[in-house]
Every structure is written in structure tokens, then in C-alpha cells.
Image 1 (tube, rainbow, N blue to C red):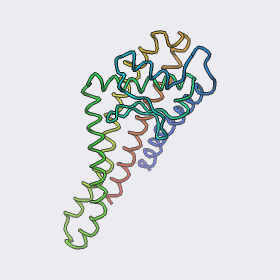
Image 2 (image 1 turned 90 degrees about the vertical axis):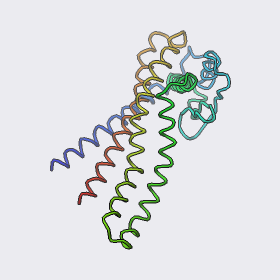
Image 3 (image 1 turned 135 degrees about the vertical axis):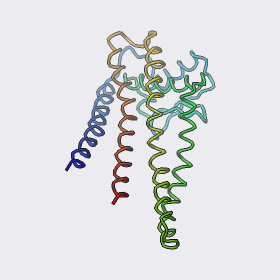
Length: 227
């Protein structure tokens, strides 16, 4: 019974924030704002040039809004790329914030980038170990096969969980130390400051919810292993 209560509690703190995030982003993405002369893509290009990052490109994507530190590209989904809503403008500025982190060589951003690369390799290795561990158990009939399974599961789930927790402070910095100060230098009206803050909090909360979801999966796997 305590496990069930804990499980339901985790589900609530994971999915309720996700619903709130979707609601906030949708609310400020419905109407065109009259005081925005350009789209999210145009603002991103303007800001990048303004802060001395003309080599960073602005591209449209279907894979979610993000900054790619390898290709040096700010990528926005079609609705943000072409939109003139508060959500479009704020999200574009947030991704420019990541480009600023990269341009400044901030240690936490670099660490997060390296962790993301490590995670790709770790998850591939972990998936391979999970595939071969049953065969190792059949062949060797030794406890070492269980150890391989534990290591594999950590590589698959634990590495992703670590990236989520490392990502959160990087996202908060891009939002509130980079994007928001930029937007307040004449790009937003004062009445839009609070809604922009809500959008940026919602964006950061998605990573927090992702970390909690990863923690839940890891806990469920650990319970299965104990049996």
C-alpha cells in the first residue's frame, strides 16, 4: 500500500506540471501580438546579431525547439519560427540564451553538452548489455549476469536521468539570466513581463517533469530487480 501511494504521488507531480506547461504555452500562443513586428525566427536572428553571434544560424525544425551546439544553430518549430505570439518570441529568446551560454563557454553548458554525448553512447552500450545478459546467465549461471543487468539498466536509464538533472540549471540560466533580460530591453511591454516569466518557467518545468519521470522509471525497475 505505501508503494502504491508513493507511485500515485509521483504520477501526480509528473503529469500535473506537464498539463500546466501545455496550458501556459497554448494560452500565450493563440493570438498575434500587435507590438511584435517580426516572427520568432526574425527575433532570434536579430538577437544573435546584436550579441555578436552572426555565425549561429536560425533554422526551422520538426524535432522541437532547441539549440544545437555542434552545428551552432537555433532551431524552432514551424509555429514558433513563423509566429508572432508571445510564446513564439519568448521561446526564440530562450534558445538564443543557449547560444549565449555556448558563446561564453559557460562550464555548466559545456558539461551538459558532454553529458548528452555520453548518454547516447551509454544508452547504446546499455541496450546491448541488456540484450546479451540473458544469454550470459544461461551460459555462465553466475551472479555476474545479474551485475551486468544492473550496469546495463543504469546506463540506459540512469544516464538519461543525470542529464535531466544537469539540464535544469542550464535551462533556468538560459531563461532568466539570458533571455528575460534581453526581452526587457525594449522587446516586451511591461504588461508582458509576467506572462513571459510564466512561459519561461513552463519551459524549465518540462525538464523537471522529465527528470521525475526518469526517476519513476528507475524506481520501478529497481523494485522489479529486488523481486
